[in-house]
Length: 176
Image (cartoon, rainbow, N blue to C red; front, top):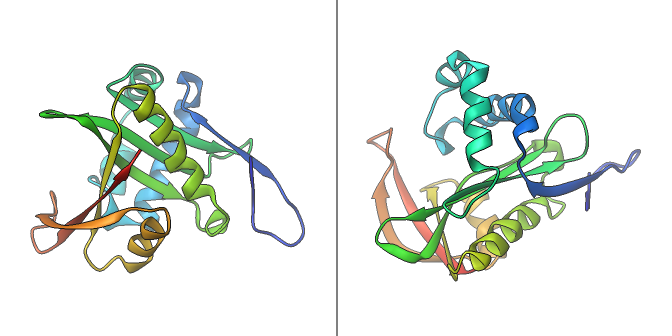
């Protein structure tokens, strides 16, 4: 459990795999993610807000178990405060790509990012994939530094941002 960085109230957050009943709370967190960090994700707030709840519910149910794609959340009760996903890459059976990583601003800096990445890593290892990779928008120094602290190494590979041609992303890897 991770505690919120406050001086008056300390609330623990449990990091766990998402469950089908998390769909409404996951939708709320997704909208927060997109509003807070629009360049880090592949859809806009407007696109996500327009998606029906049934679509969120189906998406969450599809990643609640299995070995192809998984999502993990930080849950203090009430609103979810963090998220990280992992998925396989065709052609690289030993690799899990970490995606859609987010920690609510008031919860940043207390180890929650590491706990989310650790859960993805444990799932990856259990699925027989010993390596992790993620992409960070070039210039997002806060995220870059945070991932370096977690042991990710910049591979030197740069790829175009999938939605914004003027931006590039850098790839970082580490053992799971």
